[in-house]
Image (tube, rainbow, N blue to C red; front, top):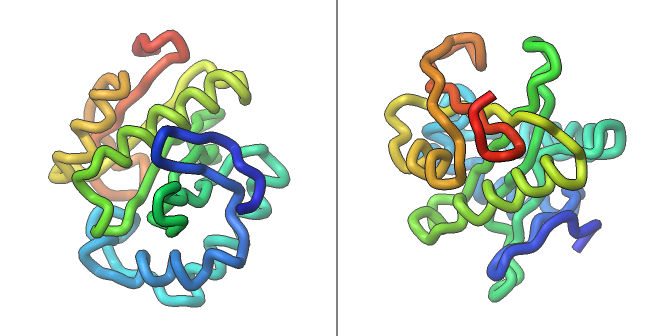
Length: 175
């Protein structure tokens, strides 16, 4: 595993590498898995390669990206989670996660979100995080509230489609 950034009882979050292309392509090429990510369309292998290349570059330049998430018990790559700057909206940092559908409903998203937020507030010294999701993604909305995010409204600013916006300050309060 490349540079481990965070661990939970069941997961390891590490710096992405091209070694994960096949596993991530297996996840992101599935339309059901991708229904609440970006445009909702499955990604081609080329898109996955481009995303990993971009993630590696962002990690090197900014110290944050969507990291690869590995299940400790199986050693399998099950998704990604991390922090990305939202360049078009000032200095906002978005917390996000995406899991292959076989890993939904196991509490992994909550573990990832908690570990990522702790890393951002602690290691990176970030004061506030933003998270967005599609209004109909009820499971993700529950995760965000569970880890301490507060819903602040809807917006099309993020990704050009209606999303529900959440915020969390480093002390758990809405900023």
